[in-house]
Image (cartoon, rainbow, N blue to C red):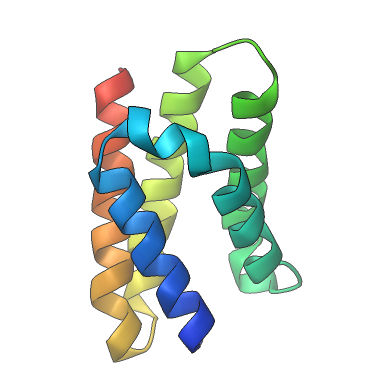
Length: 111
């Protein structure tokens, strides 16, 4: 992902929301996830991330709280994000790595 001012701000906002814990991130999750899906849409390199984000969005908005599905999705997103960091531009690498770690940590809170 080529970082733009918008995507860099989006990374920062997502990291900060997740650092505050899952309970505090829950209220912003829907719009945040939808924003990421829109950002990644049309880029075949990130189709796996987009697909997993859609699964997470669906799990969160279904009305039924399936913590197992949410944890699995967060874990998968953490792995994909960490892998994406390896091929990112230098100014995005650290933030993507950090986001990957925060997503993985959030998944373990639910497991």
